[in-house]
Each structure stands twice: as C-alpha cells, then as structure tokens.
Image (tube, rainbow, N blue to C red; front, side):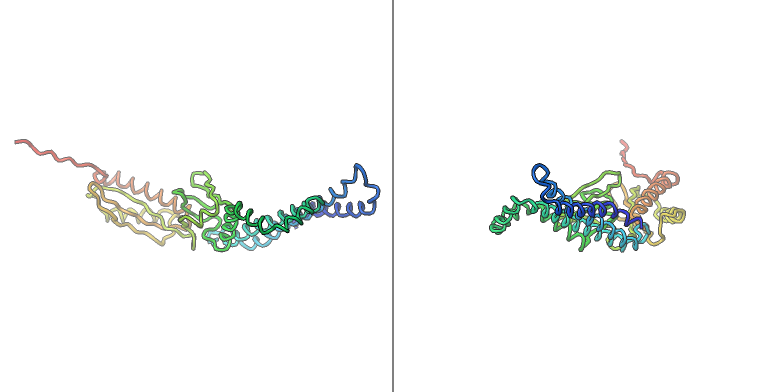
Length: 304
C-alpha cells in the first residue's frame, strides 16, 4: 500500500481540477473579461495533472515488478539485467509522456493550433531540417534504447573504460555514469559504448579472475613462492577456491616476471584479494629471500 500512496496526491489534484473544469463550463458566461483566461489555465493544469499521474504510475509499476528481483544477492546477474532494462524503458516511457503532455498543452492555444496546421502542410521539409539538426541527439537516444535490449553492460557491471576501472552506476537514455574505484564519476555518452571498445569483467558472471605480477631476481625459489601462495589463499576468505596459478611469464635482463592468477566471487572482492596477495608475497620475499629482490649486478675486472 505504501507504494500506491505516491499516486494519491497527484490523483486528487487532477480530480479537483476536472471538477473545477466542469464548474467553469457551467459558468462560462461569468468568466469573461479579466478572468476569461481561468478556464484555459484549468485545462493546462488538467493536462499537467494527468501527465504527473502517468509519471508516478510508471514508477509504481516499475517498483512492483522489481520487487521480485533482489539485486543485493551475490549471484545477481538476472536481477541486474531486469533492473537495467526496466530503468531505461521507464525513462523512454516518461520521455514520451512528457512530450505528449507538452504537445497537448501547446495545441490548447488557438494561435499555436493554427500554426500547427501550416506545419503539417510542410512536414516533409521540416522533417528533413529537424532530422539533420537533431541527428546526434536522436542517435544518442537510439543508442540508449539499444543498450537496454542488447545489454553490452548492466547496472553494477565491473568495466574498464578509458583506462579507468569502475562500476556502471547509472544508465540514462543519453549518457552513462561509471563509478570509478577512487570515488570519481566518469560520464560518457551512450554512443561511446557502441562505437568504442571497453572491458566488461562481469558480462556473463560475477566471478572474476585477478592477476598479480611479482618481479624478482633469478635466484628466487618458485616452489617456495607457490607454497607461500597456497598458505596465503587458505588463510583468507576473499578467495573462492577456484583458480590458483603461479607462473613465470617473462625473463628479462635483470628480473624474472612471475604472474599469479587468483579468483574471487565478484570484482570488488577480486581487487581486495589482489592487493592482499601482492602485499603478503612481498613480505614473504623480504623476510625469507631478500637476496632475490630485483637488483643490478656490476662486475669489476681486477687489474693485473
């Protein structure tokens, strides 16, 4: 019932305006002169009231439907998909309702209604002119609708965009807000995601694999590093016990590159796990293999 209370005020206001309209119609002869504009103002307010009711109603219907889906669950892929679609669809419907409301208000003015007849006569030329001038805006709007149905990303997806890592925080018809890990917000037009590549780490699942790179001297013991990795992962709840790999991925002039792959249940946890593993592995090397830390060797030839 609490949800429907949002509709009570706009509905009561609109009904009062309708009753006032009926009253004005019965007293049409008494509202001439200075007060002759009141019936027309009442018509505008009725249209605005119905528009208000419809906007509130779309929000109520969305909330009722979304009650079936819990986005706070760990495995919330389907819930995020529905949330994304309904949020964008509600914005599309609200946009149409507002445009229709404004159109009806404008048509209620006799001078504008007469101009409208002339505009319809030259609709072909006007349509071409408007089409060219609003090409970018219409393209952005269509991109928002495409994202709602194709869903290259959803709300709360972990993405890498413009070299920044974060989560999809807000999806609108014309722009998308990415919540960067350091609390900044990256705002991009919807067309960006259809024209340029970006990384989506949670496209099909919330599970994610994180990587940690360690650079050491050639004298390090890789078996000891693997044993330490096992110990670190067994003593943390961040690891989901699915992926655990330590491999030597490169050998450079002065250092050896070791890559560690670990898995977590979602992207924020994977970030924390990577930081934890990196810190503990560096501490292990400092305490047990200080000679294996990266170093530069200089060989001096003895003079005869």
